[in-house]
Image 1 (cartoon, rainbow over the protein chains, first blue to last red):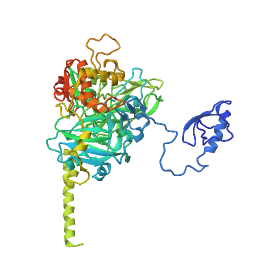
Image 2: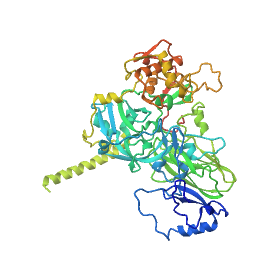
Image 3: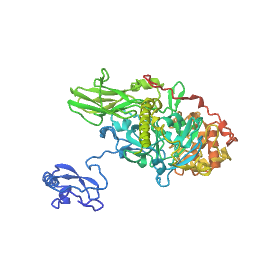
Image 4: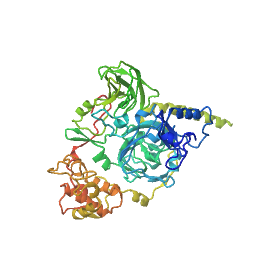
Length: 419
Length: 199
């Protein structure tokens, strides 16, 4: 059965004609087939045809694929990001553990992903410094390096749905985790001789939005990383190739991608993103600005919509994180918030990092709600939506980190529920 | 191995031990900078930036006006630039969209238009940001293509449409930082703190 480009499927036998594949006999199964060019398609097969293919496809009876230059995801696994015009969300419900595969890391761009030639790349650091300097990518890689595993989350990362039909990806898929590697910004600060009078720095991207954000100098000295690698390889273009700023625990937007310039100053620049965009009304006529830290949060990723569960043992699984430090406890409720029990945290629990949690539960088949909430090392307890709304004068906006409930119907159908 | 190199190795060992304990003591306090204490004053990587190459990139404008170029703009000229290069995304009068609403409606009568949408007039705390942002990122499909005069004129037009300057006001490096943005006093720095309080 050749596809539109005339590629021959690898698994079809000569005996299976196009006619029998497409019609005639009753369908016994829908299988995934792959063409020589690697394109997947589904083929409907009859029982006898399926048997034929199973015989042919017994992996112990035919030599496998020889070693290659790049690994591939199994064609049976198809996790995908969910793109909109401005962002693309990580499929949290399809992932295990805490490292987000680099090609599934969420994206938020303000005018597309630029193509930057690493050979022409330069980072300029100037302003209130002794010596304004230019660093090539090769220069940056010569400096002492640092790696850390940490989450990155967009501060506009909460969605709900009145009918409950939203997945973890849709609710909060703008958070991901990687191992980030680069040079500490403090190392570069020393190299250029940052003035002790400098209190802020501007970070500027080399994309079509020429993204700019002002960052307090303390964060630059404390733990900022000028990153050139993610999960063991060069940063992906969508994540800022060849170089991005990484500020552990701080809202995604300020982690400027495609970083081309840093300017030291004695005041913030009041850029568009930090004034008219990433700010939030909090009631009393106040608009909160420079709200960098990501508050503690968690979400149960299994079970979740659109799954249907069966009565009996269920391992409730999820991720928890805080921009203020380590997660010290995750509590799970299986009775709509009446009682809370501690979940198991998967070691290692890292500072400002997604932490996996799990809670073993024997569901009796009665409708209920399951919830999770994070407690971080500062004593912050992840709030319900109604508490957040009350604290912010009824305003929705950035930095919404509410407890997420999943309602389980008596037929096992799982649906989102706002708290 | 000579006596002196052995001695030196021993001294280094001692030094590294004390440095390690110092690091573990100070890491928590200063967020992990301690392992840079033994760095040389300079690694010697990278080169000095020239004034010319800095000037090419350094177009940012601060609220105090630092960074604004020479030249000026008029509301009437800005109206023409807006119609030609901006109205396609932001609407004929800066209200209709489809993209961000730029102009506040004083007396909304059209139910399709949300009176409370964020606009330059009701949500931008600094007039200088208007210049900075248009210059670097607009128009969306041709970012960075406008001249300084066009950007000054557009800034003047948008401030006027929002009722913030008069029709014959000239916008330049001196006048722009002085434009009073009514929402500025509403902006407050982050008041969230570590700990249990929900804010």
